[in-house]
Image (cartoon, rainbow, N blue to C red; front, side):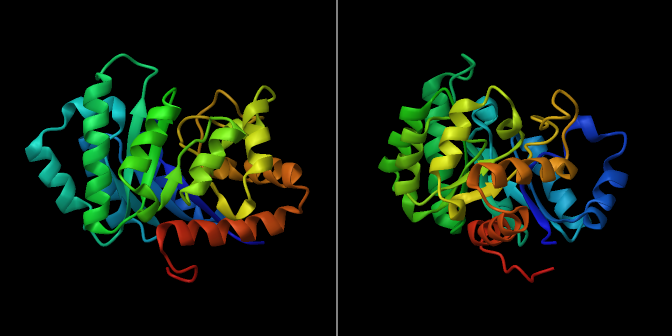
Length: 261
């Protein structure tokens, strides 16, 4: 059975403080061969770097989430730039727009989104895009900043299949996780049916968004087999074929070799 690559996790989160080490050490024994831990704040980026140093199979993404973009200034940005060049940093992220909350302002979010897209261009790494209730502005900024030249993934994809076409045309991958197993996820299921399998990668966004039957509980990479099952059902394929495809896609997204340890 092909191993699983969790392309988006937050094992730095305090939800894992009590058993982080035991859980992370159990992952390879349970078929989770690689994980990308994704930065969201400056503190989360620091913790992410520490995890990549401790565990061979954990890679990092360095970036500031739109909800935390208010903490950025020029000094912090210089630090980010330096950390993005770390050997095990495979992407700039998660970056983007989140209009669900009123703070920071949209202007602040957009400023740092553009700056971090340009940072990715400088360090020649793909981007992890967070977009919530901001589909049009996200797509517009990605087009204006020629993000198709960067490559990357739309994390926790939540928009329509029509919007998916826009991101597909820019060559993006789509991060699909536990929400796909929810009974009320009709819009996402339609989008996933439309998106070619070669553009899909698995992610948990743990500790959030645990799939059914564990919805509402703390999520971890160990739950990804439920997402594989849901994806296989939608695509009308067997689970092993899905596992092989998303394993290949994940390495292509982050420019890693499938055999690399």
